[in-house]
Length: 291
Image (cartoon, rainbow, N blue to C red; front, side, top):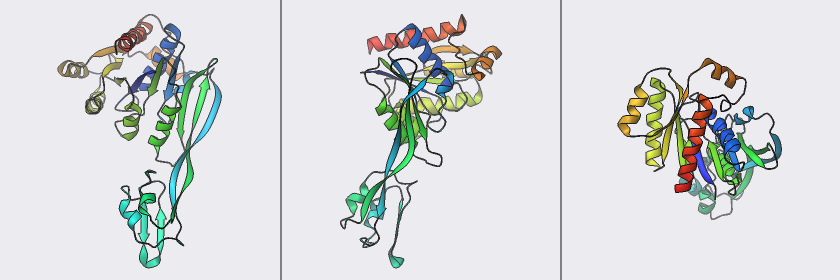
């Protein structure tokens, strides 16, 4: 059974992906090769930008089951419309009209259960794809990609997580930004969550939201401060007040920003950056051994 680590942030641009890819590289280089990086930011996956040697080994389509109503069999009783919790079904008996909005449907199957006349069948709609990449002899990186115009991130993230190998020692989930349903789905199976923040008012505001979510989900978590030295000390005061563990600090530096902009890893920069990611990896290894 894999030890699952989710890396989250309350806002985009905080450095979540920076931490995810560099932690993955550090663990793979210094600890174990048997680790997988799972890019769950399916609206805009970009972990692969940092691993130009990765090659595609498998690609598959993700389908969503969407009900289709046969108006020739439908009695327009509106029972399916009543059962639908997501307002995806529209029935107008006076003009014998029945329709399902695939963008609002959550494929729960309630309408199929409601219909006693066999008027509803499920059809498969492609909503995205999953891709496995290798940098050696096994899958190292998994990526989910949402079809443009589709709102069903959660379905792809669920399938992406199921596609990851439970035989890996460690799975690292790079979560979408924010605190909405896709983040909840990403974090749901995690053994530990790393919250990435920055020492700015915006960073602190979104960190509070993410911390509240982790507490509500009863998840163990710790904080990585990215761009340390930028902004103020309010984030640190908040961590002290809430007794939240600070796991690592990644300093703000133009050299590091330039390295990142070129799609290069920061974990190889000695000595400070390398030490911070090593410290983070050792912390996780100790947690893994004690959990």
